[in-house]
Length: 60
Image: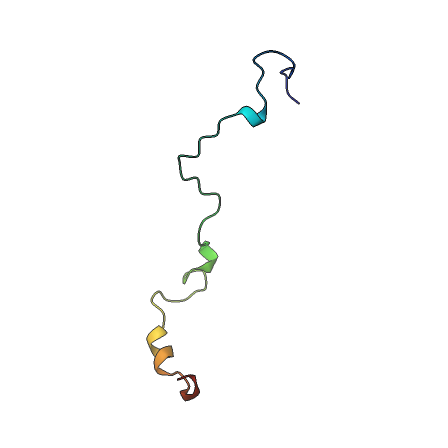
């Protein structure tokens, strides 16, 4: 509840507030720690080269 009387001269409501959006404020990270190699108990780097080499012939 507001202590300001909206009928008083000079009283400002929420719609009149200025909001500074110049800084990059991050609410949620792009990637959580659970969604990393360490979170999955895997070694960093991966095996993409092996997976591409072992592609089934019908994928070509």
